[in-house]
Length: 474
Image: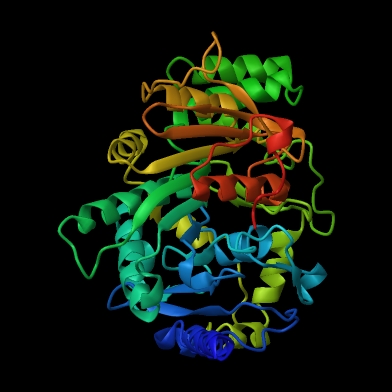
């Protein structure tokens, strides 16, 4: 009798769990992606489509469930930078998503270092602001009115409406992760969430932290934080020390740009950047040989590079996302007119008005509010170098957690190898370098990138010795 009771209980529980999983996102089922061309079979679901941010503006998203137990896992929002670059073409299918595009956009293959691996996290990719990727507006004036405040407000409105589609995830821990100009996007969005959460009930978003690379957001990768002056000086110095420019150019640029920039400083900085522009975002990495350039130049020398184990990754992503059958499967481009997809939009970049020149005070505000924040940076990135990041962070006057008599700097390990260095601050910020990685850390060093997000979400520091450095992402 007891055995029969147990069997009935287990079968009933399994039936309930199965029904619950089938109805995990009842409002979002219309956005379920089926029949994506070239997709391998999966044991998880993914969704794509549009969510309104305002009366005129609709933002495109791609959402991947965690491969195991998605209903209990945190939600990670990934943002690419630019401004004007796509999180769908970048993060989703060139860096951290479960699929990577095969050569010439012919199909998809599994990414063994996907951030929805095992029980790690649910992943949400957002093309923002309007005009990036598939995101659009039916008002022509919106394309000319783009700035930091509008981008943050639209992203917040998007999230509120997105959670109406996926209410089961609304109470889960929420993290913002990004790279490059997302170092502005992420903390600015986090500030809006933090302010609107005060006294909110139905509109409360369970934000827990940020991780960014450049330009600081809640987990920020190589963030562009407070760097214009630092970038000028550091880029000139970096290029000369690595043998990329002549003594004459170095002396001319240094004289023109320090201590106060003269009128010909921008021209000389451009000449310095141009001398190593094809390798700037990963100075030891291969370049894409099937095109004349592997980057999308973005005003003032700022560029986004298609790089990683496959240096042609975003080139392939553009081809794939331009396919009519792919757009149909993703519920994108509802006009059904030919639409060539671009990883980065020059129109958006040129129209974008950076209204917040530095996010350092904002970062400090978020740290003081109790949000966990990691900033990570690849040590082969020539665009935003580690010295730039260190000097910017030092301006916040944080207190290092002492590791030895010299301070808090210490090595961290991945798979029994030195993977970089890190420093923790008493106030709640962690700065991490990634050895051998360029500007887009998850593309250049996917294993180490996966280790970063895994430890960040678990609230654990990176391993300080070889024996701790096994794969713990499951």
